[in-house]
Amino acid sequence: MEKIKKLRVDLGERSYPILIGEGLLQTPNLFSPYIHGGQVLVVTNETIAPLYLKSIIGNLSAYQVDSVILPDGERYKNLETLNLIFDQLLIKQHNRKTTLIALGGGVIGDMTGFAAACYQRGINFIQVPTTLLSQVDSSVGGKTAVNHAKGKNMIGAFYQPQCVIADTATLNTLDDRQLRAGLAEVIKYGLISDAEFFCWLEENIDLLLNRDADALAFAILRSCENKAKVVSQDEREGGIRAILNFGHTFGHAIETAQSYSDWLHGEAIAAGMVMAAGLSLSMGWISAEDVRRASALFMHCALPVAPPESMSSEQFLTLMAVDKKVVDGSLRLVLLKAIGQAVVTSDFDHRLLVEVLQRS
Image 1 (cartoon, rainbow, N blue to C red):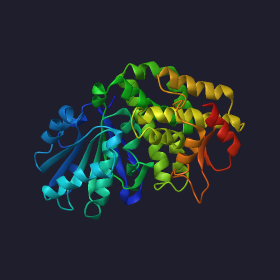
Image 2: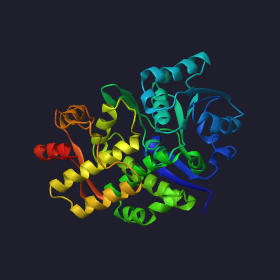
Image 3: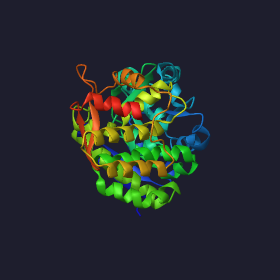
């Protein structure tokens, strides 16, 4: 297998590469083509900094390199924490040619990207995702945001990175729960657009759970290929890109209800995808066997297939009403016509949705 696999997110002048490989953080001069000034600020968190910050800084000796270490966790993905990035940029006198490097999981990637979109009206940034979930999903596509107490990712911007550098060796330090949460997003790609990949996952899920390097590299590459293809068609989610949010309307409601604690993002999304599949079944679009296969794969990964018992249907509906896919008061959901075929629709029976929420 080649040391570096390279994909391209095709967005015209905003196009950029995704580099996937083992040991990329130790690869000399890998970052240099994507840094256009003399200053770099590495944004990371308390968990990742002791593991990889020194490696990153060691490869950037030609630049003024500063760093900011944020608290770790979804509950810190807010405007208050975001300001810590701006504080460091201003204290260290970074100009508009500086480059931010997001070293961490999805929370770090989202906040760093949003900071880059805002600082001096836009500076460059590089995604260096260190979790499976961020390597296959959140680092690709330019969605940046922070959470609000009343809704997840409601304050943000579409802002593309210069590149994504996914070092698969960082998954060796990922705990089992985070790995399983990342697999939820991997499974999502099979469900929404790649039935062949879903079948591969059914046959090879134990290899992924056991961290087989070749299997992980293939799953990351295939997931990124699926996402890059969709993003290239619809950068700002005006149409087909919304299928990438399969399960997220339900899952984000779960996360918001829990104040972004208790469940990881991938855990909430796994339950949300099973709920969306259940509504698809109620609509007569997919079979009970399709729902069983999806549920079985999530359960094999020890992921939730139902929301917390404490959540009522009324609470779900209230939180789903502030979902970003609501247009002119009409809730749109991502549902399945088949495994490998997702659709975005507001043409669903509201009573069936309530039934799904009540029995979940």
